[in-house]
Length: 184
Image (cartoon, rainbow, N blue to C red; front, side, top):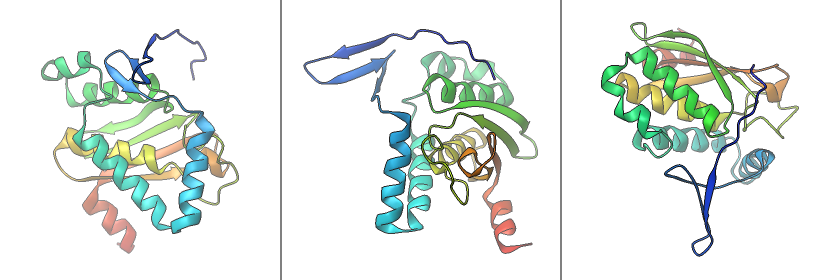
């Protein structure tokens, strides 16, 4: 993992109370805050919270281009799907969600493995019994669905919050995910 830092420029509109990173309207929050919000949701509504967070992030990623740099969008026709997938992973890094790197990207096989360090979901959410990065896996699933033009699913198989040194996400078709769920 690269530990170098780079300065970024944010602009602030004090009359509207808004921050911008490039053309993207952003909100700053402490990384541990995401874990606190998720835990409070889990307390209030139980296990359904993980599904709600995952689905909302999946739909967000599938339907919006707000966090994808215009440079990436302008060059989509010139890039292979693998290159687009790698560019999308860079967006996680740029927007402070985590440091993401591809372990495997198999466009034809419609699967991928993504290793994540320093997950914004896991920070502040230590000693979890199971993986907790529902927002990140939802965004990955939504981006993969958009890239492959079919419903995709993302499963977190290892999580920093439950004792792993990194988080590991497996992307697969929704059909394969359902077969795994049913034990087929």
